Image (tube, rainbow, N blue to C red; front, side):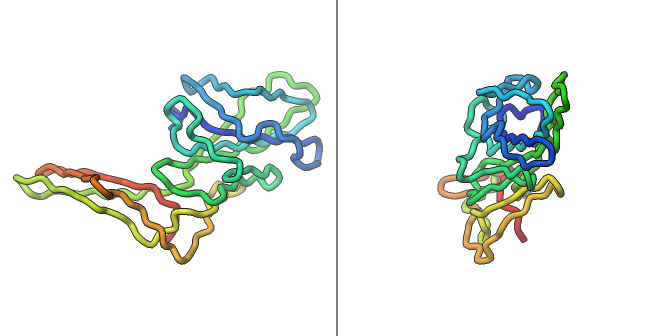
Length: 206
């Protein structure tokens, strides 16, 4: 949530008049904050007069801890400012959440003045599936192992458009992927007359 996001990456484009967004202001640049209020990035970009700007941001996990581990390679993420769409190409699901935001137009007139901040409202690109186990026994501990979901597409290309604020994924109908929620030596313990939960992230699909 807004209280613990500390890292994300940003694309920014500028256009003049009714032209196209052909001036890349920021290109997959790491933005970070220690307090969630003051944000820093490098190298700095500067406002220009008579211009319209559009920005998009994303984070692939590690949004709380300091560092730049939430970025994706340029081959796997891009922002088309003219269509106002962010595309995640051949994205593979792991244990990291994927969030995205598009700012909308920010216009600078004849004088720069005090432009203010660029607002970002992040949304989730992935779905979380949660399993909760209830142990009705009064005197034994329940052990859950080898829990997985079959027939998933765990690698796909997805888009997020400013026009409808929705995540759209190109799902492979063969769906041979697996989400290994508990595998190997991993065990979920549920004490007597207690419950315990485990979850995993997946690309949204039927």
